Image 1 (cartoon, one colour):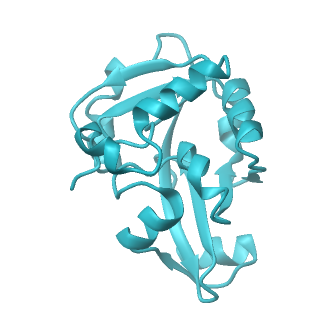
Image 2 (spheres, helix red, strand yellow):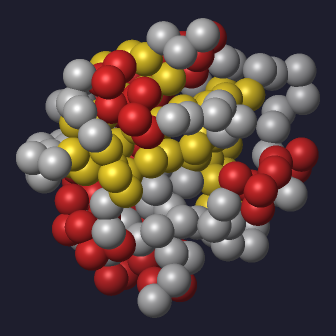
Length: 178
């Protein structure tokens, strides 16, 4: 199965259910449907149609990682940020990091490869996934991310994203990478 909304009903939390929950919490977001995006390069091909003119956009790159002690991490960075996993592991104080498997991604974040997103912490918080996010997101007008599937993108203000984190009981660790 791919990571598109076609198969969202096989996820622990469907994209539709997540979007309804966001609305129920009074959170506002822009919503876009597009071809499935699997990479940052794919995302760049559609982002001109997503970004609200005049706003500062924070477009995400997400890494699902594990350490040697089998602890799980979701790291959300600005999409063009270069990253060295060894250096990142040292900065986070967790040692060597490697990418988690597709099976573990589904088990711990309830999503498939290509749809990794901070919004997956709706499932990840219960599974003990530790969440790190690029502090640069705090200064953006809008943060763009997948709502658990890769053929949809939503844009939220930092304030609304912070309320989401509070509602799912997630306290991000903010990474100052500049």
